[in-house]
Length: 302
Image 1 (cartoon, rainbow, N blue to C red):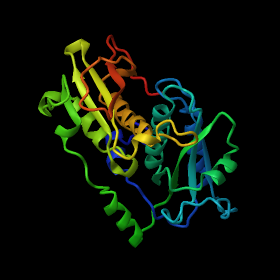
Image 2: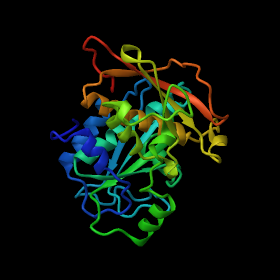
Image 3: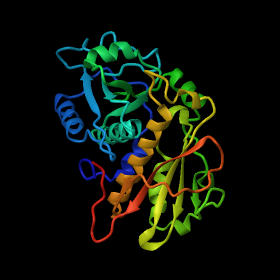
């Protein structure tokens, strides 16, 4: 549980992409709690440090966010979590997605609305605001604040365009032993809830690029995570100065998996142990595996 004894499953179900905010600045105490959380949870499961800064308006300085634009996709945000990472790290973007989504869920527990921002923000201005370092890439930001009582018409259009409430079916995402062999939900046991929370994870344009294959049995069970790239996103990987949003999506899914597993007492950790399974196409690649931890081991969520 992240805050006030609210179950992580409740927070995941409560979180949505909020694009309209009330004008009231986030309370100073809430800002302090969120800033402290960012400092204390700044390392991903593969050890990459993520620098996340909170930039927020205050009651005394409502103009603190002047010049930080989002091309009209967000209205009235009174704060931003801005994240930077060294893109040279092998798992930089996965760790980035994990760390920032962890903070998003904490912000949800604090009563804040949030929305991930990738290509819809003026990165140069955000980079100046956090003093971006030479070795860092500003990978993404999260707008936040108290949700407005009414949505703008544009919000509804964006949500419809991205099919925000649409989720891929279970048998399109989760497999038993190999791709093409759908995992029966009842056979997933307690992990059915874990996988349900992965399905609810946000992703760029709601493409839901994660695929998971369960392999092995009992104490040798592994949950292998794969990225199935969306056509049109493939070419962005490796472009200088551009974050790989679908790898960030994988980190978000890993966060939902790990936090839910921890809450359910399913101890484990993310590792890189490619099982060498046959891949369904050239767009699919191995990312990581969830390995069970025995003998009372503790889930690693950093």
